Structure formats: structure tokens, C-alpha cells
Image 1 (cartoon, rainbow, N blue to C red):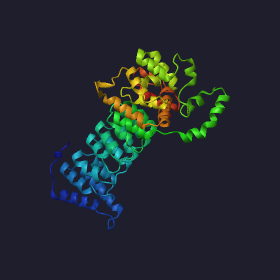
Image 2 (tube, rainbow, N blue to C red):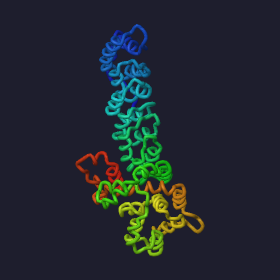
Image 3 (tube, rainbow, N blue to C red):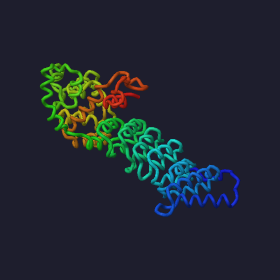
Image 4 (cartoon, rainbow, N blue to C red):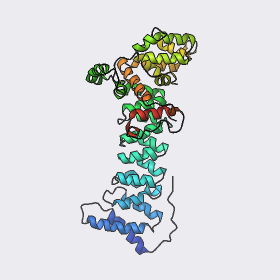
Length: 400
């Protein structure tokens, strides 16, 4: 934290000191008296020029006097708010006259202390939050997301989701924000901790009943067209009600999804069996691989509940992935206990929505380039690059 130090300017006579204080009195005068706004602004212009040649003690006195003034001209307030933080603190913390442009300028010109104080304000406008979400220090960003009075526009949440991949402490804060939407929550799921994952699955899952009911006739239309339209085929992935893939079962060496899980437990989970589990579950190989390799295991609960796999098969799948059911004899692995609880809290319909959303968002925009480091998925030269939820999710989940 900075301290107020003398600027090194020689002290001058009584006239300047008296004039300085009279101007501060005038500018800080409440409205409703004889002072006109024109006079206030003229006095502020003179005071600002004097502040350029004042020492830090006088600047701090001026900032304190104006900390509660809504009438003080904002150019003067912005200057003081961009002074060293020990001077600027009362203004940034208490003055309500600043608008979004003022606060953004202060955040850009100031130090981490300035930005932290802005993030803690009673009201943080959306454009300021958007800037801090992108450019603020980690502790500043956490304070911003924890501030219920901060306005977080969708663009800011997008940036926070991206930051949370390298700062998982943001995940529970993002998950609890009212502005967070399912695409944000079901993306941060992949790097969130267990309690946050559980909260995400409880809060952001839906049963899609209205969507399914509104679009049910489209399936017949697509069948008549022999499923030839790739755009419609991609879109319908998220809407379709049936989860297991009957066509895959007809071609599979296993008699059921449960049979594939049993085989994996007995013989070990090899790549071919994992792929078959994905096919039988109605998801693409990249989605199945992400779920089966998920370190926390909550995604396994979603897979089993969505596909109608009974709870008795969850420990079988757990063992097939070489994860211990017990830490020692008679002591259940707490992680498996947590995963079992996640299985129980989910309804089949909501689990299917989550699984279908993951399959749609992870596989429809997936490219091998996404897992080769660097920028992740190639960026198409059209609006998909900026607006597509699937593009953004796949870049974040697979691109490192």
C-alpha cells in the first residue's frame, strides 16, 4: 500500500494556501445554495491547476473533502482518483459521482490497489467489470466476482470463464452468480472442484420439456429427408429425447451398455471398449473420452444416469477405470461416495440434458488441433468464431 509522501515542492505563502482551501470549500459546497454550477466548474478548473503544483498532503486533503461530493466536477475527481492510492482511496471507495467511463479510466491508469478498490465498490458498472475481468489481477477479479453489487455482463462472464481455467478459485464464485448461464457453468464444470460441480449439476440442468415438445415434429421431417441436412442434424443432437444409440447396439460386440461396462471391469478398459461405451451411450468418441478420463468422476454419474444405467453399475464402471472403491477394507473411497451422491441427486431427464449438451458443445466443434496446445481450435473467418457457444466451449475445454 502506498503512503502519502511530500512531493518535494517548496511550501509557498499564505495567499496560495488560503486560495487553495477556499477553492476546495467552493467546489465541495452542496447544491441548493447560491453557488451556480457554472461557478463550481470554474472554481474546479482553477483548483485543478493548483493541484498540479500542490504536495501530496494537500491533494489528500482535497480528496477527503470531495469524497462524498456528487456535485464536484468529474474531471477534478478523476485526477485525484488517479493519484497515488493513499490519496485516491476515499474517492474511489466512497464517491458515487463516477460513471462507467470514469471508473474504467481510473482502472486503466491506476495500480492494482486502485483496481481492487473499484472491484469492492457498492456499484460496479458493466463496462468496468468487463475491463477488470480481462485485465485485472487475480485477487482483483476474485473480489469483483464475489461482489454481488457488481454488474457482470455476458462478455465479462465469458472472460471470467476463460480465466477460471487457470484460476479454479473463480469457479464457485462464477457458479453462484445470477448472471451465469448454462453454457458458462457446464464449461467450468470440467476444471471446478467437487462441491462446485455438484452445485452446477443441481442448478443448471433442465429437462428440455418445452424444447422437445415444440420440436417433436421436426424429427419426422428430418427422417423424410434422410437426415441429409448437417446443420439440422447437429442442432437436433441437443433436443432428441432418446439417449442410447440403438443403431450402435446392433453393430456392437456387446449385448448392451451394461455388458460393455462389465467387460471393461473384467478385462480392463481399453480404447476399443471405451469407444463402444460412447457409441452405445449415444455420444461421440471425443465426448466419451472426456467423460471416462474425468479425474473427479462426477461426469461418470451423468453418463450413467442419462443412459438409464442402474446405480449398481456405477461402482463397476469405477473399477473398470482402475479407481479404488475403498481406501482400505470397510472404508469407502470418499470420492466414490461423492460421485454416488451426484448420481442420486440427478433425474434422468436432467442428466440427459447435460450429457447431450456436452456432446453437442464438445464434439460438434472439435478438431485435433484443439489438443495440440497453443490457441486451440482454428478460428473460422465468420461470426462463429465470436458467437458460437460450441466453438468457445471446445476451445476452452480442449485447447491449452
